[in-house]
Image (tube, rainbow, N blue to C red; front, side, top):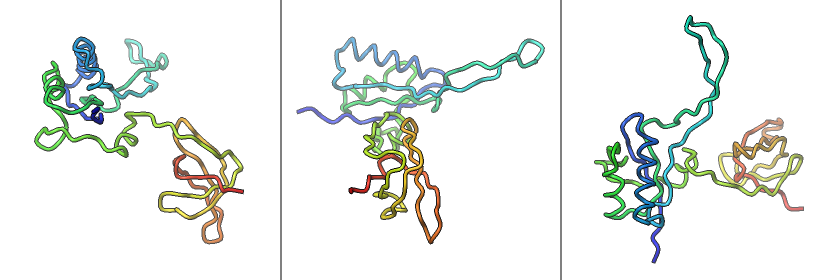
Length: 180
């Protein structure tokens, strides 16, 4: 019986995130335990950084990858004594995040909010469609879709509240198209 793999957060020495991730994946491949340790991620974002010459004058901008959570690596794994030992004894790893360093898996909501795993949402509505809000504080309201931003998992909807038209941002899965 295959056990469920969950995301865990591992604390590392500052600056060792990529080394820990690479070493861990190498160990997984060498021991052929891809079914137990499924994925290792160091979440990064692309930002523009100013570039300066030796005299301090700005000479332009450069695109760089910056770690979103410095000092942390995310590991999707089936937790058992063997996998715990492998991760815990990877050079540069200082332990799992959790009370008394006991590993606690991330909830699905935490995984989504931290941006560890990209969740794809099927959108069954388009700009101009009438939609119902099916989740959140405005559940039960209806409105018209003004814009859809799939990469950022959001939709802008005009909702009528208290006799006023109000533009509200929703996550894509909080809405469903009104059936004709």
